Structure formats: C-alpha cells, structure tokens
Length: 334
Image (cartoon, rainbow, N blue to C red; front, side):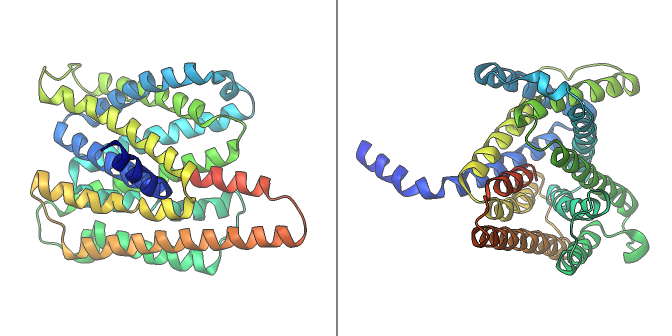
C-alpha cells in the first residue's frame, strides 16, 4: 500500500504546479459560494475574511522572520498603501457581486483585470500595448458586454435587469481596483516581501470594512449556527486559495497557471447550479468563453515574448536573472 502511494506521488510530481493551480481555483470558487450562502453584509464578510487571514499570516511571518518594517520605508510605503486600498475596494466589490448575481458571471467579469491592467500600464507606466493586446482586449470586452447584458443594449424585459446590470458594474469596478493594486505591486518590485504586502493589505481590509459596516448598519454579529461557520470558511478558503496559488507559481510556468486559473469561471457556474439551482444563459456562457479566450491568448503571448527575450539575452551573452525575476514577480500577483 505504501509503495503504491509513493509511486502515485512520483507520477504526480511533475504536475504538482497544475494541481495547485486547480486547487486554488476550487478554493476561491468555494469561498465565493460561501460568501453568497452566508447572505450577510458584504462589508462584514470582507472584514471577517481578513481577520482570519491576519491570524494565519501572522504565524507564517513569525516563523519565517519576515521584516514588516520593509513596507513602511519610502517610497515603497506609498505603493503598499495604494495596493492595500485598491485591494480592499476590490474585495468588497467582489463580495457584493457574488451575493447579487450568478457566481460564474461575476467571476468572468472580475477575471477581465489583466486587460485593464494592460491598458493602465500603457497609460501610467508607459508599457508597450500592441495591436495583439488591443484585439484580445476588444474580444474580452465583448465577452463582458454579453455577460453583463446592459439593459440599454439588450432591451431586457426582466424586472431584475437594471439590478443585475448594477451588480455586474460593481464586479467590473472590482476588476479595475484589482488592476490598480497590481500596478502598485509592480512599482514595489521585489523590495518588499509578498507576505508583508499581503499582511498590510489584510489589516486595511479588516479595518475599513468594519468601520463602514459599523456606521451603515446596526452592529450585530450573526447568531450561532451555519452563518458563522460560513463566514469562517470564507477566511480559511481564501487563505488556502492564496497559498495554493503561490505554490503553483513556484512549481509551474506562470503562463500555464494563468490559463488554468480560468477554471474559476467554470467552477463558479458549477457551484451556482449545484447549490443555488441557477443555470447560466447562453449569452453568459458565450461571453465567458470570449473572456477566457482573451485571457489565454494574452498569457500565451506573454510566454512567447519572455521566451524571445531570453533568446536575445543568450545571443548577446547578457544575464537574464533580472528579467526572469521581474516577469515572475509580476505574473505571480495577477
């Protein structure tokens, strides 16, 4: 029995990165389902998720002796602050979208952040934005339109059409906030450890939502029972998703991980159907496929560009370590 288990481990070893990526998608999708099942104020859900994340991160930071002061030095502190604020806005918007629309639809719209990142990076960081990037962005934006189905285009007769479009717009706002967070991470570079950045983000993502929740809602925690367990599960699943994603990036090429992570959308639709009995429309499915196709095309193009850069570096006998570190870091946080 022990021998067969060892043989299985040996056979799976080359695929560990891909398995971690799939696990990451599954954990994040389950977290989204728990957010919707809890049906509690999304600000409080975001705060509780961050509280659980702080507790779990604290032990990792102490064990690995991470330097928290590295995130408080100029000019990094400004970008760390930008990442934490944008990340907090993104999480709150995501949780609102998960609670008010199909999980798969919300995931598909949120997954459009790489295209927004490319546009903002071209404007703010003067990064190259090619015709290929433009075409992939237009394809994905067409997918977003099909998933969101704005009433002024589709003339829907459904009573909930305006409400659904509002939820889709907030999901798109989450995507924009995620892109802004990524740009701040790019500016930080490798000067601040990713654990430290995530730790400060978790603190802000706990304090800000809990303050807003206290002001806008009569302060009361959910009664003992399933709701509290669901809220705790949101925090644990979110942390497990991040750990799995980090392990995936360390073991496998970022390009492949980016493509595998599109299964977030598929898992979202499956969970929505199983748990809530809601099936996606044909327009949503087609729109999601367009978004996934655009994301996959950009990931493959990124892989090709990196491969070409490495070949050029080898021909000119220059070191490629700095290129690899920069590319790996930026891809890790997508």
